[in-house]
Amino acid sequence: MQLHCLGTAGYHPNEDRHTSCYFLPESGIVLDAGTGLFRLAELIETPTLDILLSHAHLDHVAGLTFLLDVLYQRPVDRLRIWGEKEKLAAIEQHLFSDLLFPVPIQAEYREIDALPEFTIGDCTIRWRPQQHPGMSVGYRLDWLNGPRLLYLTDTTGDDSGEAIEWNAGADLLMHECYFADASSEWANKTGHTWSSRLANIAQASAPKHLMLTHVNPIDAEPERMLREVTEALRGRQTCVSLAADREVVEFGR
Image (cartoon, one colour):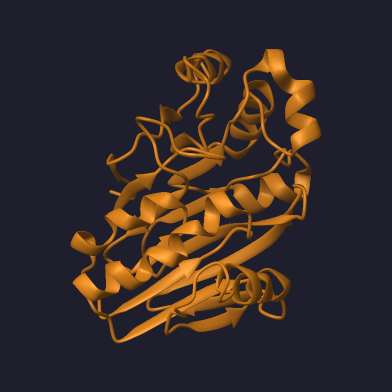
């Protein structure tokens, strides 16, 4: 299966990265709707699109306003946007306010609050809450007779036994790593993950592939986090990489 990285930064774009947006063309599933969503049109393969929102901070939802252009270029039969009730309401009320963006998009808003799991095609999706200002959710995607993907962004990182059990068996673990260890105190204050916390999570969860996401756009050397995590996982059977815009990641094969 292929994952297309349309935007890999957190907070704001920079010269190399747009904000969080990832696409699984075979399933028509989009993970978050940051500014990288403008790259979506040429990759759409299915008659439906389903967007899973981790939360409603602007760097993860601003791209929803780009859908008019995307769907003009590549129309679909159905567009669904999934997220927590309160977050979806904020998007409808504020992001698509006449004073901010005067043209509503034709989408079905699907609340996940009462759904411990739901399906999109042959993919079963489960979610759990995460620590972050305003809270966020992490998603686990399981394809029938196929791979498992976890998308855990905008979180301080949960290394509890319950979380590790939930994370286990991932072919691809996408986990934010916004700060190096030297900034762990600031990471805790802002609700983000730092290198050694992520390494501890990966050591216990043992994914086949760990991809560091939600890259700090003002960090001149994001590879520092990659080095710190890779060194901590030395000798483990886990491939570690740093997400990059326009990268295509193969997993589950």
